[in-house]
Amino acid sequence: MLELTTISKTFFAGTVNERLALRDVSLRLAPAEFVTVIGSNGAGKSTLLNIVAGALTPDHGSVQIDGRDVTRLPDHRRARTIGRVFQDPMAGTAPSMTIEENLAIAYARGQRRGLHRGVTRSKRELFRTELASLELGLEHRLKTTVGLLSGGQRQALSLLMATFSEPKILLLDEHTAALDPRRAELVAGLTTAAVRRHRLTTLMVTHNMDQALRLGTRLIMMHEGRIVVDIEGERKRRATVADLLDAFERVKGAELDDRTLLQ
Ligand SMILES: Nc1ncnc2c1ncn2[C@@H]1O[C@H](COP(=O)(O)OP(=O)(O)OP(=O)(O)O)[C@@H](O)[C@H]1O
Ligand SMILES: [Mg+2]
Image (cartoon, rainbow, N blue to C red):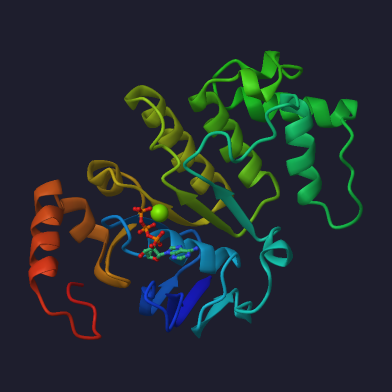
């Protein structure tokens, strides 16, 4: 379970560059809940994910994972609980290393002791099986340098690596944005499968509203550092892109108070 309580974050406070990125954001995610996150540029989506990951510390508020307060725990101390995939296919993998070396590193991250980064025969078998589940033929290319893979192949690999350590939480920041529509669909499908299989509590940022509606169990829209739409279940299933655009227009025109506008 992930619980964010009244999180605020301002960058460059007290300077001309001051940016209020998050205003009193509270969000509670049940185990295995899969939330898609939409909102215009600068709405605070990445800041929110960075605070969950521990890459940023909030000015106010708290982050709890499974009842444990991790607000001030640095990212490397949360790494085992959290898997991340970024927009840039280059970001999640080591391009000069082979597929199996990358997987070995990701696998070692999940181990409690030591850094067993070597590739043993049994690990190689496991890697093959896992890669086969991506249905990209990568299981036959363990010795291929990751830098030679396409963006879609790399994102699929990044996703696999992010879930290798069996994290509790999966954070996806526009991880299909740099891919062509077919590859984006493929990676979206792999995402849904991984979330279900590992029962991951997931936050997935996307600018694709259609994707945000189709994937996941719940959808939130952010605007100027607040969560302004929060729908799940039947309401989410029935919602259309036109509804979201409409909500966005209303939010833009409204003077927001401190409460969530639409729920
Ligand atoms: N490291 C940082 N230093 C200074 N300002 C930042 C930093 N990160 C984010 N901001 C500011 O905080 C606000 C929210 O940014 P954030 O990156 O969270 O938006 P976003 O919703 O992810 O937008 P996008 O859709 O463009 O990725 C913006 O005004 C941004 O300029
Ligand atoms: Mg962002």
